[in-house]
Image (cartoon, rainbow, N blue to C red; front, side):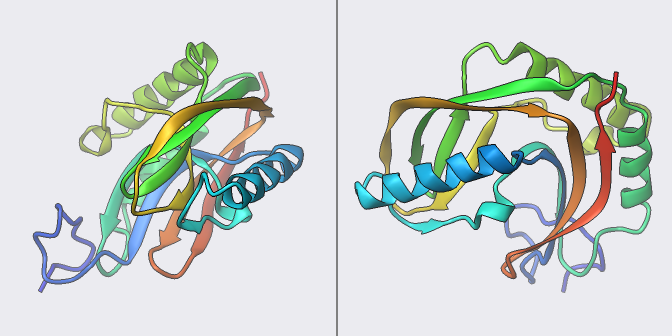
Length: 191
């Protein structure tokens, strides 16, 4: 049996993870509405197969801080909160301009050259390292929003860009398999 709060490592433990902790960005209301319309059109046109993600759960993950069997380790949330609170940044625009996927996800992908997004993530990475969370950092970053969970491949195709101004970011605990997100902190971008 896995230890309480022990992160999973690719199925090496007896139990499936029940909790995920991550930092992310959510679309504003107009962008969420455009995403809902895009998803409906892609499903109608049989481009996006699979189970669509609920609109209120659509997000871009900035940092995945771990999957855990019984609970998120008690010290991890305050450390992540302190790191997030130390980040100072101005609001910035994100743009997504293509869709497609490979098993098991159908993705909305960020436009090439998302310099402001990459710079913001780098600031957050630095803050997490300073807070002692270096081992939670995954250097690779492929900015995307999962639109559906699918079991077939779909070719990459360009769409009319969907954009919004990022004005906040969140620390979220996801209850895996229950389709529930719990905010553990929200920080505005105000510079």
